[in-house]
Image (tube, rainbow, N blue to C red; front, side):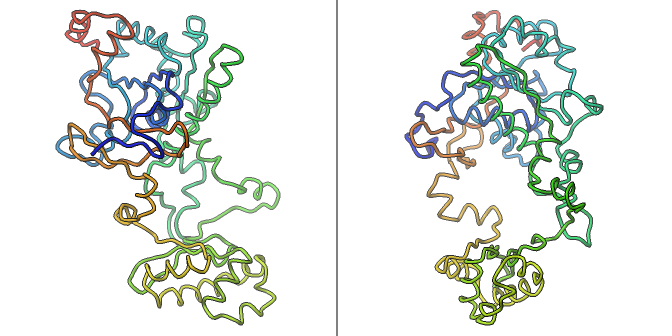
Length: 407
């Protein structure tokens, strides 16, 4: 298999070609931010502690001793080792700062400062440097010094309170939501800072909090609380007052999502279901009326979907212009032709694990698409290349630093 680009030839220069990113992060939030930049052509240098490396190497699914999460999260990155706790390691890091456009980190606030690597400490020497700082609560405020974790951020931001059923405790989504959305905001802000730098010639510090990034997703919940005193609750598979729009069972034991709360779409669904009485009912002609009768509508739609197998029902709804889709597990996603047709599942040959499927680059770009060149590299794989190319160190210098545990 060949590394693939979505929407263009393999290995075409990405739109961020020429930008260099120093990824000092661990786990998910910082590395995900840097991965997004690498997907679009930035030269990303991933820094790990010698010996133990990024803890994510030991996380989750392992194949032949290699973390598949590491392979996914750190694709398109050159991997080096560097002991940031050591004085010599900190000196090398400052030299790498001078070769970078963007530094990404997700340590607890104050850690970089203890190493002499905080933004205020290097700004004068590197005025064009952009630093993305991702932490649990941000670089300021009463909680700044607390350890941050994605699950805690999801809870404190209100997301977990809204997730699940009203008669059961709050639950979680099945992936690292807070970390990934914070990384996404970090990458967006980095690009905004690069654009601004073209005018001012100056870099800046970007402060992303996991709590705030996740809280920002809650659409109108804040305004509804302020103006109406409404505290949103858990509502299972639907939203209060939005009907019919939920998850419904099918005859073959699967589930389908149907979104028919729009006036025109509701009429299409009613016609398809043979519910002329709904079409003649003035209370159901608008979304407010349908919202008041949500339980009745959802029960009727669920009874109807339960008479059909998933695939046939999905096709039938599509033919009649009713938005719907299967509730897939990962096997269903992989088998769906739409994901394959758009390159949303990329495949490459990895020297450690062989054939490897990875999520494709998002979004598509018509002229300068992103691409995946390689999956997460071996620890220190690019030490000689990076330290020789950027810092002018000789092979003997690199060997000596390695012998002392600095790299």
